Structure formats: structure tokens, C-alpha cells
Image 1 (cartoon, helix red, strand yellow):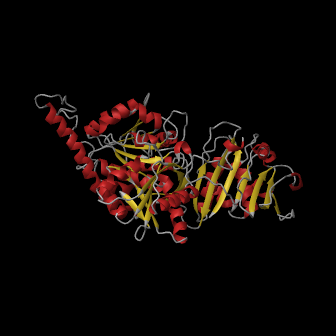
Image 2 (cartoon, rainbow over the protein chains, first blue to last red; image 1 turned 120 degrees about the horizontal axis):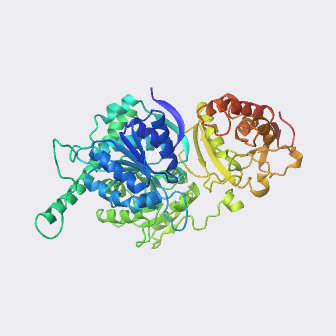
Image 3 (cartoon, rainbow over the protein chains, first blue to last red; image 1 turned 135 degrees about the vertical axis):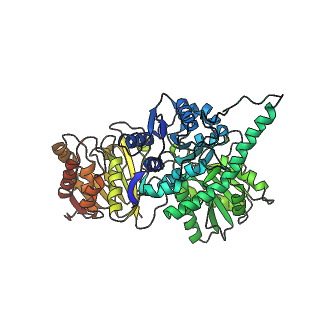
Length: 410
Length: 190
């Protein structure tokens, strides 16, 4: 029997890991991921997870250890964020072209400097081009379910790529709600036999070169390098279909359904829409419901899968509306807008129709994105619908003076 | 949707209290979302935690700015923090204090008050001024929104750092029994 517990997002992720039966977990703690590493350590100590747990000296080693384990056929997990992810970048970038199906939670945190230890999606967004699958969760149940699904996606023969399951630091990592823990037998049946490493096994009976020297301007080098790159792109492209299929399968197993790529909320007869990603979405939906009651024809589009980019799905959603407001929890420096907004602009090229769009940036470094903030997003996007042009992003927390906060009152 | 804001000082267990109450409310069939405020974790510094509950699924994961209920775990905190900030009308205030109602200042948005000498009780039970479980008993008494049994059930799966479960269960009961509840005109209800 599935059982219900009340837990935070980091514990929900740890239960997802436990049910997926990894062989090796390597961790190095960093706020707000630390309690996730601690839950896993506790589960290993209690025998709930039968895995080798390696406490290594830093995140570069975390992922290097898992690469070795994965090459030896192990199912692996880790989690990190912020500066930990930055320190991990060298093996991080190598993992996708090695085609290793490692699953890693990014408990998203804003980037320093200036100093901050709180949530924001700057870390995950900054590594969006490195070849990992990126999925963002809205609530704790979705975290648990997505960690499990991530193994099916990563280990799929047509994908064979590492997957990041991202959940918002602070708001989800420490946010507590009801979570259903599925049966082990159900998850075992869903995940099936491990398929971690059929393509590059360190197997004396089947010797194979891993990570050969390629490139340059002569011989087979350039062509071989292109083959690797195109293979990675193909895996990414295949992942779109696999992610969709795996979500359907999980619904059959668990009874819980999630939009695999993007979720359309009250979009059918909408004139305009707001776009969200991650835990902010709940407040966005509440604001949309209130605006609907006031007669606004407004809907919401939530990004679940950000890599591979769900171009086709987003295109179908955008066809339905005449203006869009995009709320990002990070900054694309240089473009000076939010990264999701930038991607929306690219997607619009394939729409053959110009839609007014506004970039909103909020929730940086732990700041809140409330229903009131979303009311402003909706009002501003309605202005864009009626012809006003916004050439700069709207910074949602720029004038926040939050009442009731200890930091203000001290 | 009902919104509760916990105020306390680092080390008194405000965040843990919100988690235990969340579990207790789930025991009673409610949907919950609880999040801590995000400050630096320092002993003695003001902290807050937020808890929403409802009969239907709660979607918003945000701080609480307009609480229906304020639970304050520390007797001196109202001097340094505006704990009543943004409080909705007909609010409920549950305060750890050994003072009587006429010695306390509170705004007109408060319609019911629960007062409990949680420090005194905590020193007797734990030998330290950790008030969270006592104040959950005080909340149960003041609001009637959750039963003492559910609060105790909510504590079962919690790894307490400073005392064993049985002492915390005792603390909840004493908080419940020793809380004085007043309605807005200062009349003692129970």
C-alpha cells in the first residue's frame, strides 16, 4: 500500500531516490541541498537505500566518482546547487557526451556575488546548454515522481543522457506538504531492469574505447567529433517523446498525471497568457483564477521540461493567445532578460506570427513571487495585449518592502 | 484557506512547530503547505514560519503576509518584531507569556487571544526555554482547529533534538491545559 507522509521537497526527492534503488550515491553538502544529502545518508544508514554512499571532498569529485560508477554499470544519484554546481562544471559538461544516465537534483539557488544563500534558478539556467535534460518541479509530489521518472528517461536506449530534476531552493526544498510514497513493487515494475550502461561498459569481454581523442582538422577527427555532437543532439531530440511516454506510463502506475513538457492551464479561450516555471506556478494559477473571475480571458503556460526545449508543444500553446508575459527566476546576462523569455522569442520565430511579450524577473535570491506579484504580471501583460511595448524587463521585487519579515522589522 | 504565521527565536523550534502542525492537520484530512522564512540561522535571532491549510488543495507556495492567526513562541519578541504586521481582521493571537491580558498591547484586528506561560512550563519539563510543542497545545486550546491527539500524532515521526517524544507529548498537554483564552472584550472564554 502506498502511504502518505508530510515532508519537505528535499525529503520527497530522497524518497524518489530510495525507490529507484541506486547502486551508488556521492554527495557533498551545500545549502539548500544539504538536507537532501542528509536524508539520503540517513536512508543508507537505516538500510532503506542499499547503495554505496561516498562522501567526497567536493562536487568535482562527486560527479567524477559517479561517472566511474556509471561506466561500471551502476545506477547513480547526486544533488547539488549554486556554487557546488559551479565547482562541478568540468565533469558536468563531460557527462552528456559520455552518454551516462546519471540523475541529479539541482535544488536551485541563486548565484553569488553578492552573497546570498537562497533560492533562485540562476544555477540551473546557467548550465542549460551543457546537454543535460532539465525538468522543473512545481510541488513536492512532483519532485518524488519526477526523480523516479528521470531514471526511465535517462536510461532509455534512445536517450542515454543525464537528467537534472530541478526544484526551487527554500520554497520547495524546505516547504512541507502531503506526499504519497508509492509502493516499492510498483516502482520496481515501472523502472524495470537497470539499463545504465550498455554502450560504453568497462567490460574486459567487450573492450571498447571510451572518450577517444577526436577533433582537429585532419584524418577522421573532425567527422568523429561531429558524430559525437550529432549523437547528443539526437538523444536530446528523442528525449521529448520519451519524456512524454514515461509520464503517461507513470500515470498508469501511480494515478498521478503531470504535463510532461509544458502544461496549459485555462488556455482554451484565452486572449493572453503568463508563463511560469517551478514552484511559482501555484501562485500564478491562483492569480489566473482570480483574473478569470473578474472577466479576464487569461491562461497560464508552465514549463516542466526546459531541456530539450519543447518547441512544438510551446508552439501549439502560443497559437491560442495574442500576448504573453514570462516570469523568470533568473537573469540571462547580456540579453538582460529572463532566459525563459529569451527562449520564447526563439520559439516565436516558428509561429510565423508576432505576439507582444513581456519579460518579468522575480524571486531572485529567495525573494517571494506572490499572488499580488502575479496580479501585476497579468495587468502588465494585458497592457502589452492592448499595444503597449515593454522593451525592458519588469523586476517584480524591485520595490518590495515585505511586512512581517524579521529582516525588515529588526 | 486559513493562514498561520509563527514567530519565534532561532532555537525555539518555530519551523519544527509549523511542520508538526502541518502533520497534525493532515491527520485531520486537511491540505497543508508550510514553509519557513528564509533568514540566517542564528540562535536567538527572530525567525518566522508560515502554514496554510484548507479543505482543498493549496497551490501557492509563498510567504504569508496577511495571517488569520499568529503564534508567538517567545515572550519578548513582540518588543522587537511587529508580529501583528498585515494581520487580517478577526485574527487569533496565541502568545507565550506569563503576563495577563491587560498587561499586553495588541491591535484591533485581534478578536481572540490565547495566553500561555510557555517559558515557565518549558523550564519545568525540559529545563530549557524551548516552547514549540507547548505552544501547539496552546494553539489547539485557543482555536479548536486541531485536536491534541492529532498534534501528538504529528510529533511521532519527528526527530527531536533536545528532548524525547514523551516529554514533548507532556508539553503539548500542559500547553493545552494551562492556556487562558479570551475573546475580544477581554472576557475569559476558558
